[in-house]
Length: 366
Length: 179
Image 1 (spheres, rainbow over the protein chains, first blue to last red):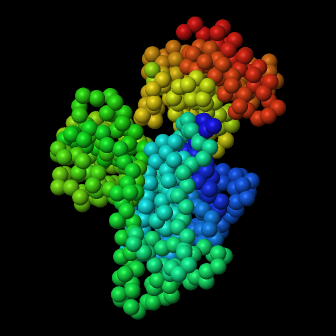
Image 2: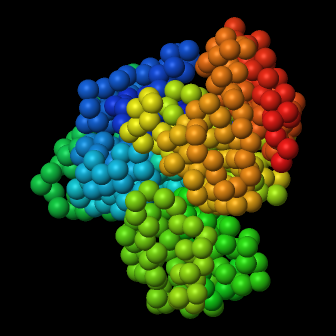
Image 3: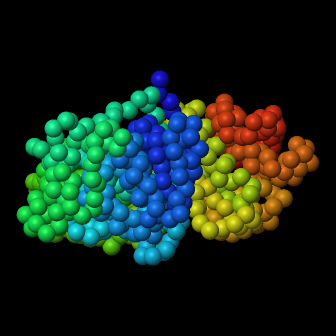
């Protein structure tokens, strides 16, 4: 028996984490993400899990990485300023191939900006914010149900690909309440274990090494330095560095067809909206209100790795319109992949685009 | 049919909780769809508070309230900030002891705070009185649904008081409003 609740997005995110088996939360409260930490603080001890209120966000992500190596599913939740503070150790998680989930309830930036208002201003930061070359996975929920579903999915993707996975939500979807169905059990994709005879950082065929969990009998060196397949630092060998970085990127990018999660409407359309997160819902409203206009819509639930193949579904597209709660961050990515013009429709300040605003944009650019 | 409800008052009256209870009634007990949002800012207790609910038979796509057709106003500041621009065919329930302005749209005076204080002995349940009046006058959710939603949203030990408050609201709504 699944249960049905009327619940806030942030609570649904925490419930998703618990359902996925998350048993460690290390965090530092920050508006508008705090309800996630609050819910986990109440729920984890009852389930034998651990909640630590850390001294800051540098410590939060460090604790999450440490916990993940003991074998548990671990997460943190934050918002803009805290997310910026996590950047260095996010790179450490990438380099050490530590599965973990980082939730960002995005608010208006730069800096402390608008603590209580929504934005999608960190969509490139979650992909490029730490130094060096790498790839990550990022999901973008548009409803309270998706706050639950995509948090579960983030844990599975993090474990499957041994990478930090980001739930890139925002204040709108974090604080709205809707009906949510919480199933008794969710699908769990476990980490692949290291088998005897394998090296702990040998990616094998798909680039994903088996996991040498702490306490499971392996003596493993885990380092942010460039390392060889044994995990030993090997910082002067150009070939070793090239091999490692290409594998870290390749294991994600070569799997982007499997990771992709998106919806297509009206693939024959000439005018196509591309959305992720709450602006999707304005476009869905527009399509509902103007059913005969043949407007196309690509709605992304997975934003990174970017599924560029989904754009080519729209064979007749003449223009792509991108309403985002930022100045056009993902529009830059879309433009890399298509010859047609990509028009950003930025909205700043915290409110969602209204259907009337998008109708206006449609009339101006189609 | 999509209906948009806006509730406003001052922080501490339970405005947001009222919005949550209304959304809960619709989404869990009336088999409808509901989205509940609120103004979320740095206001402290006593400042203007506002919560909104969209209720529809169909899935709700655009999740924000654009032009409410139902208002519940429980403070003068709330009226000035969130009620004064109500469209003419909207319906507004006003806590008549706390709000001295009246809107251009149809409205209905409900002395909820006065009733809660003098008849029920607890000012804190004024919001539940208002919800009762709202349901009696607009039928935006069913009576059974709102009863269940109130009971599973209030603190243990206060069920009887809140059920009474809701009943008083129904009575006041039926008596005071001829909308």
